[in-house]
Length: 503
Image (cartoon, rainbow, N blue to C red):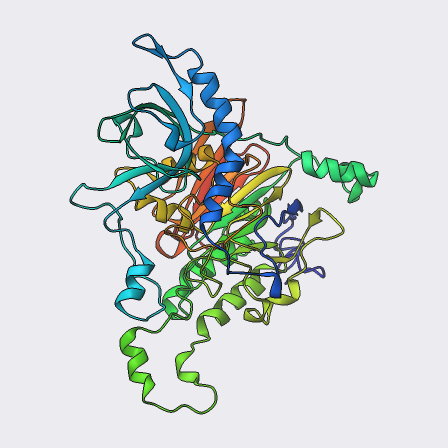
């Protein structure tokens, strides 16, 4: 049975004679940021132009890119001519060795175009999903644009790895046909990385407290954070085995003493998107036309299936008494489609919403359901953590060939944009004054959910930054949870099918 404070890992579940010792679960420092929260109510405005986002992104990243390019090319010469910077893409002159900063735009044959869809039919529905935007004819073009205009760029140095929305400096010369032959490129690279505990210690310094005494405990070593994604709960019996084993592993109810000790070290669970198999979809044209002729009075219960959300709510209510949860929405969850997706509504969780008490007065949380945005960032045990539900990587992979998810994740950070293809092929809110999708502080941990397989990589920055990249697989397919040691940043996976219930 559970202890009085709800911690299943404190006290013996049956009797002290049967189980003389059970490990207790320690708490973790959890200090979320609200970087991607949108304005509320009438302050939320979708009437602005999306073009302003590109100009805003360019203006914010230009100083860093100019600095990188100047350091790289200040002494560069070709055929006795020294490279110089031009301020605008339309200032490029034929035969002149120069470099210019701009935003990449990809003209691709298979890229969706909402204007074409509206011109064909007056139907406001999501465009059909495409596996790739690359045209089989090979006629895709790359442009570099700024406030003045657009310049077509070519060259082997581009490597076809740049996508719409990333900002770069291109060095080269204009050709007779008006294209710009690029011989080298530079991007912003990783921004400044905060020190571990920097934000927490700063807040405590202002309040006149010390971290080791502010919560009344001596903190010696951090525990582990579990990350899962793609639960894709359907509400059928097919879900039960893997989900039940996941809950029992997290709460210490499965396995022998060694498994319980491993579970006791977990201090937080992060669910990274696609918890439900699908949200309420927009009706197809056929279904819409079929329903048009039918009269419905009152609520049409036949169009709604509550079983998946009820099953997910039950899962959360089983985990939350002993383990705090950070819940990130995904593409198939009942949240807004446009990035940044806002937190899932607490009305979806009638049982578990009683635990929805994210820490306000203290940096430490032993319990609580924190429903957050997608993307999300915050500090866990002093480390800056950035994560998404996977749409940003999935969309970017449609622009390129023979590129792994890890490569895409690394380039996003080096471009300093967590969603470079928004708003071109990823729907997003039309930001005007500030673009939160720009990576302003380099994270220590960057994870992306709902990927094809588990991968990890550590990348280095130009000023000593180190970032742990984690590709989190879909749990519905892999039955795998990822564990990150928040002291050493070591990563391991736990397969639910390999866990055997203890005697």
